[in-house]
Length: 523
Image 1 (cartoon, rainbow, N blue to C red):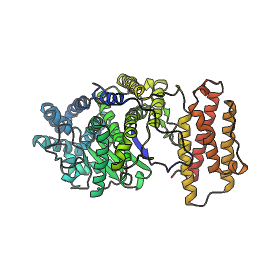
Image 2 (cartoon, helix red, strand yellow):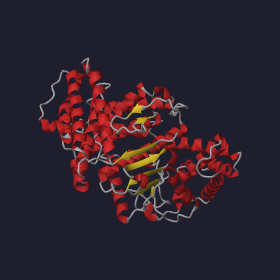
Image 3 (cartoon, one colour):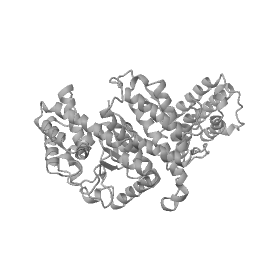
Image 4 (spheres, rainbow, N blue to C red):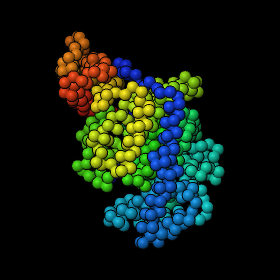
């Protein structure tokens, strides 16, 4: 089962201020030690090791294919004798990896899937010729123009031996690897990519520069798993997406071309999607997940900060939960460093504003996902997945100086409620409101459920006027004013009514979200 990770578009500025999104930071030496751990841990952080194990896995698959496809056997033999750095470069190619995976499914599972076998064989042959010719990188990026190098001024020939990330350009699209890449994109996304303008290339490099300033070693590690960055326009299936990556399209990440103008946003999303690729590479060579984790009745985790929908997309399987947990631990470090250095970097990059997740939010989401991996999806993890979870929780403990009580979720629910309140305000400002009685009924219901939850916690609801209770946007602000303070009171969780109150608030938030979706207010 494939895993797609997609980051949604940010919301407007809040009407009612939420508790700070910035956590109390640990000492600078702790932050430095965490970055070191994240890039040097022998199994989970060392990108050289992870990519070497990836190469072993793909060589083994090519040999397996070689019994039917001579082109695969020839490529496998050439890779067996190639230097490790050349193996890593060639097997970082998105199209080559897709060809291996697609051929494996067709020959060994009998699926009609992906690129046809004759095309896979031709791609293996082209990869062998690329390797024999001593050409750097992989065949997909070999024909891109020099301006496509993410690191300006670096050529493919003088790039380091790890990886040279490129920016997708519609350049010589008639080459076999470019045609195959576009076919893979059509199968998995069904929407076009954009060739960046010179200004957009400069923006990408600006965001990269900020990321390298904040986390130089982690940036190099994460980007070594990315051979291609592509921009997408707000068209078709790309609508509503901020960034994306997929396990089925290994080695490539995708960014919304309209959002790359802010370097703080870009730094976070570039790291976010690159870390997914690092984990995907690890998965290919390790027992990250149980063999049957993707079965229909497999355990799933509710991502409380995402809007519920009829397809259940807010319920994540073990792979997506672990992938998000892995990212949020790293983003906690990024945000802590960004917030710490904002004053010094603002003259060059501007203020952070609402353009990053915030360290508190990243820590809170990581903590929840780590707890859920233990309590809900543990049987779906392989040995390596369980060990990685333990390790990442240890890393998180070093970053989280004000840990919330285990099982706390109210802050996550209100995060969704507050962000959707902003979307409702924007929606109503752009068009005539729906029938007033519909909004009034929803407002009354949310206020009533909030009062009931407060009663269970022996808390009083703040006084409100009749107009405030019947005006949905105003009612939502009153709800937030009443409930936000509870997220900072750890003793409330000790009350006997807390589980029922928390469940009631969850029901209220999710019902409200569905109503907003029905109105078209969520975009």
